[in-house]
Length: 278
Image 1: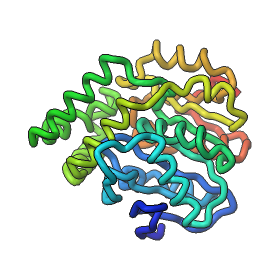
Image 2 (image 1 turned 120 degrees about the horizontal axis):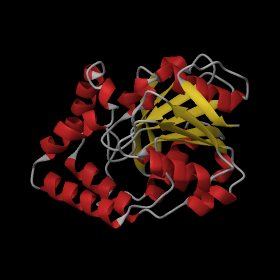
Image 3 (image 1 turned 180 degrees about the horizontal axis):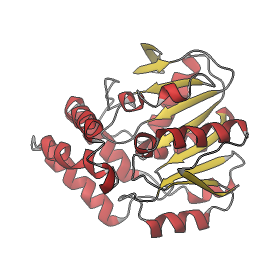
């Protein structure tokens, strides 16, 4: 992977690019993460496809641009970055918050997509309760209490039975919280609050879609996941039986196989992941 800074329109963007492969997959990280979160996962993919990871503006070491990073701004920045890399089309994989960016990308740049993957993510807007929780997080960060997020958020992403064996990954995610600029966290939280529902966009889109969902996801509980699946019969669905919100870390091989099968359409054997809809 080649690590570099590029200009994505007016925004300085930190990217890693394997630079090889006819098909391209772009991995968008979640809230309080960075491109570092994909480091152990990328080797499962780059022998088959070109892989691009990046720090979304406001996280990692990409540039912070103002007080609100809307999903539309982030999507346009990703599109500008891909053009700067000479990439015309890709399969876009969005984890959690990255999925919200991917949905905005689908709305604004559908001609650049071979496929869209929501990895532990949904097309729903924030509920009033969730939006209020985000406002409380903004208040914590402004009060200099980011450490309270770091103590709770990383571990909460994993299925309870996985937290002990994934302790190294929890510590890595905790470190990513601390290196993220306060202004970037606030800008992204404001953007998350403002984002709109994109269920109808998904249903009407002709772009192939895949949902990868952890069966023990504390952020997308089973009832919400089933409602999402029922609302989108056009999408392929893979359930990760032993994962929470961080399936690409908890069951990396199963997640990678699901992505490669989606891209190439070839059968893969995956004991840990059950495909529930073709």
